[in-house]
Every structure is written in structure tokens, then in C-alpha cells.
Length: 319
Picture (tube, rainbow, N blue to C red):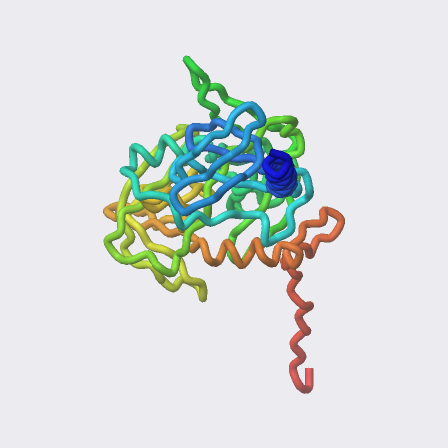
């Protein structure tokens, strides 16, 4: 009997220590989970598999299908300023959906970009307020506002952010990184960046933006050519209808990944379906080297916008 009690005590001690170890491991794996439907969960990651995520929420343990997860973020780094490699996400596990289904899971991450003299589109890449648009949309402007269209229970509620800071600019590739400074406690819905190298001709793509101020406009087309050379840069050519106001908005594949940043079209009488986007891999290179393109309002040459060297005066011999 004493032997059984001793064994029971040892088993209890082992169970207790295992519980402590599990608790410590869970404490180290505290995470915030953003779902495609907009819901947010916070808890300890007990198990992560290719098909599901098991979270300890404190009062219950929840098993979440991986295809319902939009973003998984460690709580240890959730409140730190992200480094360049942490500014965007990729998600190879995202399922292919119809354009209609993709709009439901991606549209809230697309924003309207407004300046005193212009209008464009943009999209959020990080929940702490980092947004991508075109350089030409905000060129020369400091008074920038971003509008997010948030789904409520019975309405679509526009959230306007007036305190927007320019983080980095690349005039040559026509890219700009913005940061919302008055985000407060709001968690910004985001979209992942895909691999523009793997797209192909004929692939279905779609865009969401604000052409001519018509917010939340969706247009669909196909990839005409993934590597059209224009002025020394490669662009994705597509048949997606792009108009003024679409600039800076995302070009999506059917996984809901951004594969391009819409930035121009060829428009003339009798010409249709010639739209161009900056490849997502070029955008990733810009973000990975954001410090090289860092914006400083006191420096007129920031963002690699260097002034032309002075021209020499021509002198006629004997003159």
C-alpha cells in the first residue's frame, strides 16, 4: 500500500512538472490570431499543424482550421516596431477561392488614399498601420488621409485616418510606404504578398480600388504577360480595368495574395485592356531595403530622388 502511495506521489509529481513545462512552453508561445472573418483571438499556441492550430484561450482550448487563419503573430513582438523583413507576410497555405469569395476576405485591407490634389488606392501589409501605395499618388504631399471601409453588423463603416506618415519612397519604381499614426487600438486588416515569379499568362487576377472615387470597386481580368519591359522596368500586364484612382491598389491572384501594385494603363481612343502593375517581388525588395528609401522631409534628395548634376555651358572655339 505504501509502495502504491509512493508511486502515486511520483506520478502526481511527474504530472505536475509536465503541467509546469507545458505552461512555460505555452507562455513562450502566446500569440494573436487574425481570422479571415475579421475576428481576433489571443492565447497560447499548444499545437501547430499544417491543417489546424490549437490555442489555449485561458477558459477553453480551441482548435482553429488553418484555412480560417489570416495572420498568426507572436505577442512578444506584437507591440515592437517591425523590421523591414517583418513588414509583410506570405501565406502559402491560403486556399484558392472565387473572386467573390476573395473580395469578402481581402476588401477590408484596401484603403482609399487622399491628398489635397489627388486620389488613389492602397493596401495594408501590417496590422500596426503600414500601407502601400504609389509614389505618384502622394508625390510632393504631406497632408495624406487614408479611409478604411470596415464591415459592421448592419452597415459598412468608413474609418478615416488623418495622421499618416511617409516612411519610405522609391520614385523610380513608383512605390511608397505609409504609416498610420492615429490607429489607436484598431487592428488593421492585412493582405499577404504572393510570388510574382510564379504567375502565368491567362491566370485570373482581380483588383479592388477607388477608380474616379468610386470606392470598393472590383474589376477582374487575366494576366496578359508577366514580364512586360517598359522604361527599363518589368511590369505585369493584365486586362484588369484600371482607371485614375486605382493607382497604388492591389492586384490579387485567386489565393487572395497581392501579386502586383497597380500603377498605370495605356488609354486612348480604341485602346482597351492594357493595364500594368509593379510585381510583388519588386515590392518585397523595396520593403526589405526600406532603410535605403527612408523618407526625410528635411532632405529634398530623400527616397533616392537625386538632383541632376549641373550642366556645363557650351563654349564655341574662337568665340
